[in-house]
Image (cartoon, rainbow, N blue to C red):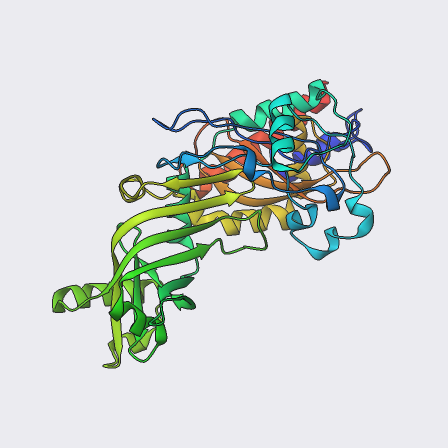
Length: 391
């Protein structure tokens, strides 16, 4: 049965496809993971209900981070809701009138007091529906930070920001083209006259920052590779690295010019990965190099675009079935072999529409390729539609 047919069948059922209102204060300002990586120990987590945009802020200071490889960085309360907006149309004043009730723990109250950032809004216990949604978000399958970081570098558009140490001792940044080698480390073709080229000849210490192709704000993924970037001089290696670069940038005819030099990251020291709000980690170099990129992320943009353009109703049904949340909009941000990340908006008590916030939806089982993703989305739509009819 096609996805469109499933949507139509659900619409004809005795229940409306999407209710016109949601439970009071269902808007979550954060769904934070309580996870631990091998050897990293427990990770503190916190959550709070959405607050007026001017009152939302990061809460980094009250969580200790041991900076171990693979460690998830501090949980935080949802930042300014404007930062979550993927499109300017979501940023109207009426869409920012969010609940002024919060949910906070006694430990967070203590930390707030110590840091001088006391939140005086009334506290209350989360509802059962909110707890179920939070529990779903904690348990939803996700790629490891190492795999997601490597996939971002592999499938990015081949542009990033290189940071080098200038001759005056200050850092300098330049937008450059790169290509990932077989280990996921960047290869470059630089003009010998460029300032960053001269910097690297003086000091090989540098980093490259790469962001997701659809980057629009702080809720989107980015990764910073830190290490040594050195000029390639061996003739056989030069030929190989030129081919690597041209595979990513077929039109880069200048790589053969005499006044262009090939550089590559020869030593990876650390990786700083940020997957969005409340998802960040310092990834170890060995973990990054040894892992493989996710095969489905190669097609994430195309899958997301097709679903958002033609099947957003299907995404809404899936969200309703998985988390009992009625979405006004549901736009898929990314898809991988374990699930998808969706930006949703919901109608609030005062009939305004919330700013977009991000939710994770897991697949029932891992999918290996693009065809399997399509079949999985059809299956999830059909199962959700059937459940709604039988309710």
